[in-house]
Length: 253
Image (cartoon, rainbow, N blue to C red):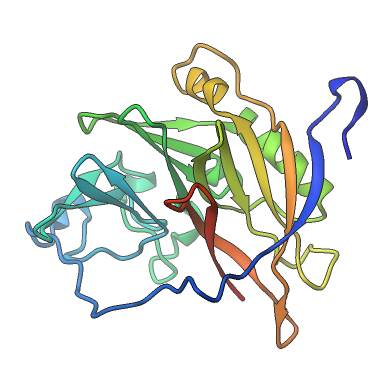
């Protein structure tokens, strides 16, 4: 349903198509250990603690962690090195229940490649602390930026869908930055949750990252029905653009 006079984003619902001939195959795993080992002075463990998003970064893979102020860079040989972000409260980089600091993490859950060598990791937006983006430059420079006005717009869209804001994925697709909103939370008003794609104009998003424009508005909301299993709703966890240009995603209950 389109709103009149440009008052807000268009909204529509689409079903999900499951293709039996396309399968993800999990092969033998390997531990992700930093080649430089643990660094207590930097509050960095010896291993990668999480992988909330994974993106190509030049010849390497960049692994986003939701509970550590550090990315991991994996080169083609498999060597893993940290890319440190600024320290958080009390000089911490690791945030967890055991330390009583989980509430302070940036909760970086999504990452999008802008197509110009830069990556932008995004907080989930589930609390004010998590309304931050991290910009990784083509040469490894890092900027952490608070983005309350950006997340205010996203939160309003999520609330209109009957869900708490929880950004779990981001892709550059068809000229849009498409954010994957996970909808299976306690506030959801439907048994299947309310997962959705929140579309932003990609050029406007880049200009905002460059501080040349205000935060972009959501131009379109696409609700996606993922269904349930044993009465539990599926929710987005990440997405990517497949070789044929379609949007592929991961979901779990």
